[in-house]
Length: 134
Image (tube, rainbow, N blue to C red):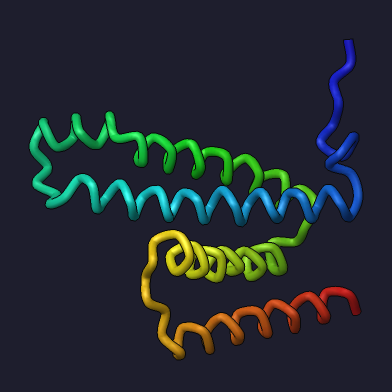
């Protein structure tokens, strides 16, 4: 019996890398949004046994944990094919996705300064990616 390596199948090549990055951004962002919604539902953090039981049973918390676990495994796959010096800064796209998710999904107000920050993040990533190609 043979096993497939990480570099075979749909994960191979540029398309596979793009899919992995999309999965990482989606799972990390979802984890943040689930945590926010669940935290709002749970209310004050009093750290009683009842509160901890409520945390353990909260669907948002469970979804956040699943999202972070998925993100961990996707991150491991990304690091197998990318340098950490490029991959880690690229992961800042999660900040942009969380901002968009909190604006579109949670109705949060996003200031002009935050939008400027998004442009700076994307510009920085473009510079890093350009430098990596040369």
